Amino acid sequence: MSDIIRPHAETAYAHELAALAAADDRPRPANWRLSPWAVVTYLLGGKAGDTDIEPKYYGQRRIIEIAVATLTTDRALLLLGVPGTAKTWVSEHLAAAISGDSTLLVQGTAGTHEETLRYGWNYARLLSEGPSEKALVPSPILTAMQHGKIARVEELTRIPADVQDALITLLSEKTLPVPELGSEVQAIQGFNLIATANDRDKGINELSSALRRRFNTVVLPLPNTLDEEVTIVQNRLNALGKALELPPNAAPLQEIQRLVTIFRELRSGKTEDGRDKLKSPSATLSTAEAISVIHQGQSLAVHFGDGDLRAHDLAAGLTGAIVKDPGSDAVIWREYLETVVKKREGWQDLYRACRDLGSV
Image 1 (cartoon, helix red, strand yellow):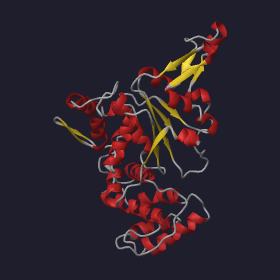
Image 2: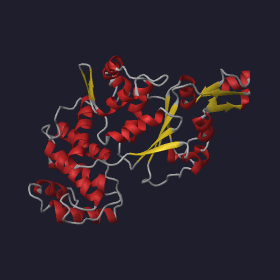
Image 3: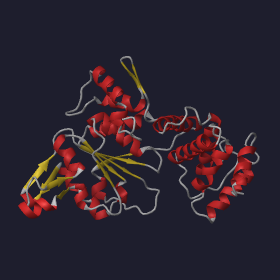
């Protein structure tokens, strides 16, 4: 595990899941590793006996309770939100806590075919033996149905609409016909599906009303407060730093606060104190992107500096994160630097660093 950059959730947090299972005396749905209460505790943090459970998600408890409760019913769960709201993160940890397996995953793309959601064939066997159970190659969703586990579909709206609709019968009847074999696969208890989607990126395909009815939609919002978003960034940076063997606390709190403040202000179109209105760039400026910018700055500081993240390290990734449209976004970024960053007390070093990189 020490050589793996990003272990699966059920591996990285195995000790927490084991502690919760040992202390969990509440009713568990069929084939669930933990009770719904323990799953929520795993996501939001708490105690399991003498073991501290680290929070995986920072936000409203009710949102996670609704998501978990949905998975105890016959409706699938759709996690919806703009990029960077931890949809994939929550999906992975829900599957890990419920099934002990977060790997039954379909990554949605424009090139996803129907067999990716249903099943395919081992063509060598198909040609030599004809259609048979041994020649059938189950999709992650079919495997989840057979074993009573949670399947995951990432970026559902990236999948072409006609392929998406292959899920309708599967989700409503909990059955997957295999006409080539004259048979069907019926899901056993514990099976359900978590899909993620966003309505911000370009190139998405709207869900049909028939498919949308098969899901209970839970919207994951952006962090409510500056402190909440800073905490999320800090915790993810610590986890990434351990995996990539970066020194602990290589990113000072001040630099994280400055970056998150910039992202929040440009995202909302106003300064944090609400006094000045701002233009917003086309970039999403999500929490995930903030983590990426800080992480890049950490790497620069460790390998090409004295190890401490400073303004010039932070500036190196800012322009690329904010300016997605070189025309309009560059103007908005320069205006923000001149009207906000330059005049803000204690931020002159960041202004100079951005100016020296050609942002102004």
